[in-house]
Amino acid sequence: MIDFNVDSARCTRCGQCVADCPSRIIVMRDHAVPSIAPEKERACLRCEHCLAVCPEAALSILGFSPDVSTLLKGHLPEPDQLETLIAGRRSVRRYRSENLSPELIDRLIAVAFFAPTGVNTRKIRFTVLDDREKTARFRDEVMNRLVRLLEEGAFPESKTYYARFVKVWEKHKIDLVFRDAPHLLVVTAPKSLSTPREDCVIALTTFELYAQACGIGTLWNGIATWAIEQMLPEMRQRLGIPDDHAFGYAMLFGKPAVHYARTVQHHPPEIYRVP
Image (cartoon, rainbow, N blue to C red; front, side, top):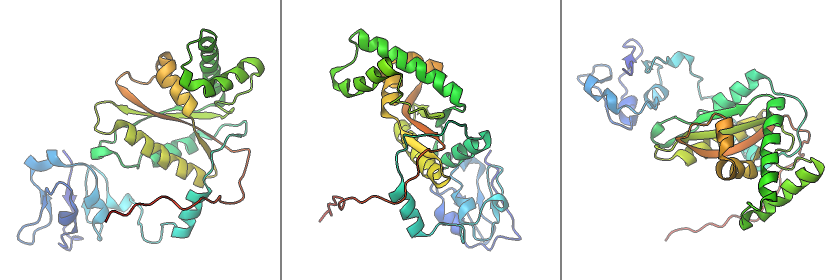
C-alpha cells in the first residue's frame, strides 16, 4: 500500500500531480480529486514527486505529510554561494583528533540518503566507523595486512605507487592512507540493482558537499577502497558488508586540522558541442 491521500479541502484540481507522475498512474476524472487505482499502485516509483509538486500541500503518500516537508522557496542557497562551495571543496588530509557527535554523523548520512538512485531503488547501505579508536584499529589491521602482502610480493605491478605508502607505515608508522582521520564511511549497494556503483558514488558526492558545508573535512580514499575491495576481502566481512553488495567507495571524514582560505583556479573545461 502506498497510502495515497488527497485533502479535498486543499486540492484545487490543478493537475500538477497528474502531469508530473513519472509512472502516469495518477488520474483525475470529472473534476474529482486525483486518485490512483489500487491495481496500479505497484507501478508507483515511490519518488514522492506528487507530494513535492502540489502547491497547496494537499497530497500525502507513503505515510508522509507535506506539512512536515521544508518549503523550497526562500530556503535554497544563492547560486554564487553554491558555486563557491563546489569550487572551494578540498580533499582534507589533516584531521583533528576528536570524534564528531553521533547526532552530526546521523545528520550527514540522512542528508546523503536524499541523493538520487537508479529507478529510485534507494537501497544503498552506509557503513560507518563512528569512533576514532574503531577507525584506528581498522586502519592498523588493513595496513599490517598490506605490509605482509608487500613482503610476500603479492602487490600488483600497477600498484607500486601504493606500495610506497605501505613502506612508510611499515618503517615509521606514519599513516599516509587513512591520514589519522577519526571516521571512515563506506557506501555499498546490492549488485542486483541497475546502477549499484553509480548510486554509491552519487551518495558520497552528496555526503561530501553537505559535510564540507558543515565545516567537516572529507577525502575520497582510493587506496582503502582498492585494499578492501580487491586485496583484503576479509576486511569486507570485518565491516559487515553483505557478500551480495557492490563496493562503491570509501571516504574519510572528520573535523579538519587545516582550513583553506580561497578557491583554486583551473583552465577552462573541454566542451564538445554536438552539431
